[in-house]
Amino acid sequence: MASVLCPYLSFTDKAREAMSFYRDVFGGELTISTFGEAGMGEGPIADRVMHSHLVTPAGFNLMGSDTPPGMERPGGSAITVMVSGDDDEALRDHFAALAEGGQVGTPLERQFWGDVFGMLTDRFGVSWGIDIAGAGDVA
Image: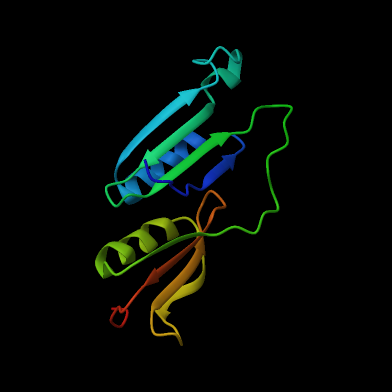
């Protein structure tokens, strides 16, 4: 099996909602395991996500979980999830979907290096960059 680089996202209590949203954006199969299913919690924590994994038709892998009470959520990291390729329509659709309810920092437009590129923070606080190699002008 080849190695796969897979961003792992941490949420306070929105992992199920966020990962379902990413499945809607990118397509694919999402598996979710809860703390309760693993015998690691009762009450509100039982329904929180201990681990989730999204595998998309394009070969993207994205994982995420809720941070259990008593643990500190990883934060302050300077990470942006980058999606790059030459499928102009699909990447524009991803950018638009991720931007819904979020904040666009760099509009999706041609950059000095020749690609169409944009950055945003989605409604879950995750930073994304979309780079479309050899793309035409933004419509």
